Amino acid sequence: MASQMAAFRDGHQGVGDLDVVRQRFNTHDSSSGLRTNNATSESVHNCVHDSERNMGIRAAMKIVLDFIRAAKLRDLTPQFWDGAEHPEKKAALESAVEELELLREQLDKENLALRGEVDRVSMFEEIVGTSPALQAVLSRATKVAATDSTVLITGETGTGKELVARAIHRRSDRVSRPFVGVNCAAIPRDLIASDLFGHEKGAFTGATQQRLGRFELANGGTLFLDEVGELPVETQIALLRVLQEHEFERVGGARRIRADVRVIAATNRDLQAAISAGSFRSDLFYRLNVFPLEMPSLRDRKEDILLLVEYFIDRYARKAGKNIKRLNKKTLELLQSYPWPGNIRELQNVIERSMILCETEIFSIDENWLPQPPPMTPEPKQQVELTRRLLVQEKDMIEEALKASRGRVFGPMGAATKLGIPRSTLESKIKSLKIDKNRFRTLSEI
Image 1 (cartoon, helix red, strand yellow):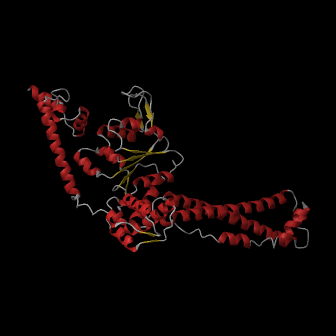
Image 2: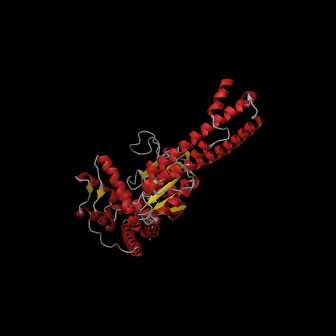
Image 3: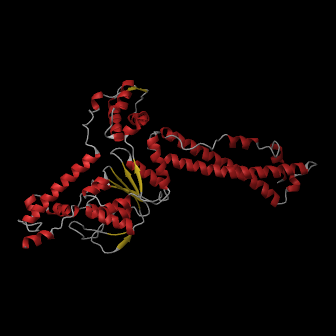
């Protein structure tokens, strides 16, 4: 041990000299905030690298401190401090130990900050853009992610609603549990309840075994309901109950199942107009709309188009094994002037298609691939009025058919036959339009 002490003493340039550690510590600036999204991968890599560097320095400090403490505990101090300069060296050592402890505490704090930076940056890894409109949404998403509140994401198709939903899940305490997504518009109306809540064996024709629904599959995690505005009214009632009571029953079952699930919903529909038209329940809307996020269209964030174009060119060039050195100026002007009714999804498809056909190092697109802007759509108020008129006409037709059939829905003389639509469809419309079919039986008897 004495030889070890001698080696330590000879190899050290002064016990209190911590220049090396100070230099390593000061090379990092921990004051930076959230990085811009166009350099996400590099930003995440740098943060991870800095965090690992801090962990390495901290480990080295721990070895030194443990060695000094062990020497003191084993009463090796006399061997270590032989000589006339004992008091001075002891004071220098104590000062060095104190400084190392302070530096280690600072490193711990800095490492936590760096890990938080990695989480924040990687949270939006696939969301590209620096425009104020987008950053405002991402800032709100970061704040709500740490909570368990229900989120309603609205916006046009192709604006990245699901990406934001996944980002919220990654930043939440439920990150280690499943993220289960379901497109409510892609599932037949008759099967949506079974898909969400599951069903028991024999619940309906074809139910040959028990099936777990999306709520059970997402237990402890997040359930993303995309196109929630397309849910039929009867399923809206069941969903409302889950949000209120945190319980549900499988189709054909009687046992209540506890639902430990965070719900994030998204839609490109105007739910307020749907409420006015009677196709969406207002009480469900208020349950979903706890924390609203509205995704901006690409038209409202034109400053992000260049970043998005560069991002997609890089992605698809690497995928196709092509070397693209620059972007054709005319192409860029065309891309920036186009209104993008399909938003980011349309832009992505155009870039991918162009990359497949590109045979030079200069990226360009065919102007004919961008269709002419669609005709101007009616103003929102006009749309609501048009929808309301159509629903009123539909309601009048159904009531006339029910009156003629004396309140009967099915059968040869039923309203469904008179209207030429399936019985299930008519029943659903009667519920959504809140028509009392029994009223027509009473009138016919009078």
